[in-house]
Amino acid sequence: MAGEVRGRPMAGRLCIVTGPTSGIGTEIARGLARQGATVVLACRNADKGAAVRDALSQETGNPDLTVASLDLARIASIREFAARFRERRSALHVLVNNAGLYVRDRRLTPDGLEMQLMVNALGPFLLTNLLEGPLRAGVPSRVVNIASNAHYGGHVDFGNLQGERRYRGFRAYTDSKFALVLLTYEASRRWQATRISVNAVHPGVIRTNLGRGEYPLVAELFRPFFKGPVRGAETPLYVATSSELDGVTGKYFANRRMVRSDEGTYDEALAKRLWDVSAKLVGLEV
Image 1: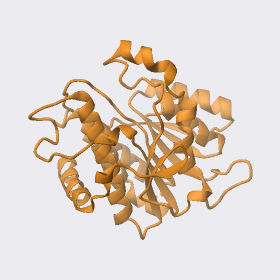
Image 2: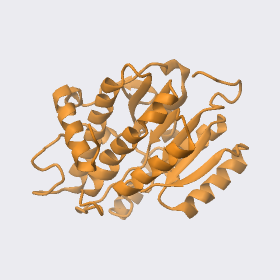
Image 3: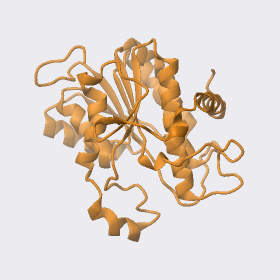
Image 4: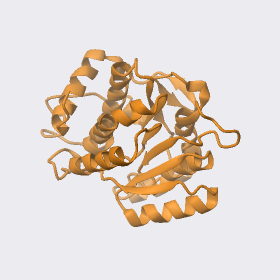
């Protein structure tokens, strides 16, 4: 990427990582800090964020880590975060939409939106759009959306988009990640001329806290077979930082390779409709 410094290739680059207080989010932040980036840790819990910041700063020798409050389940929080960022920073080089959620039973956000759809798809969608100005100012810039191979077999049912008529936790998770990939590709098309790259990443099946509160026994049983967070962060970091991917946009990555996502995610008409519906749900002008 432009502006690389030997040994610290991300020096001078400003990055945001959502969900950085555990799992691959922490490892992504650690990897960016090691490469010399200025990193904003965007998280719900300021105390946890401060602890991660202090630990990573000491470990990496990078003092340029800050904590900012962000709750992807709340539209007001996303808007407040973006407004504060725009006030304080003129440019953004990398946005990693890492924060995610799995819940078994249907829950609503304070704004009345289904929780998994909001946190996994609509929240990143709104945040990315609100930061379009700084991303344009930081070109060549990158958006990395942490998706999942769980999106294969997903779909968009506009008649039951938020599980109003029927709800199954894993189906809702699958569909939310499917929606995220669709929105990733639509953003890449809309911003193709801007030099903002927008890509989606499958980090692997990771030993994180995702789902542990819903199925603790099952999660513990299968944990030994999952990747650790360090390995899970490898592909997101590759997509966020590698000079090999300059100008690459609208792609899906797994194991540091471009792969085909679910065939339904390439439906441009569906993606455009979802974009418009999503914008209406979160109050974003289109």
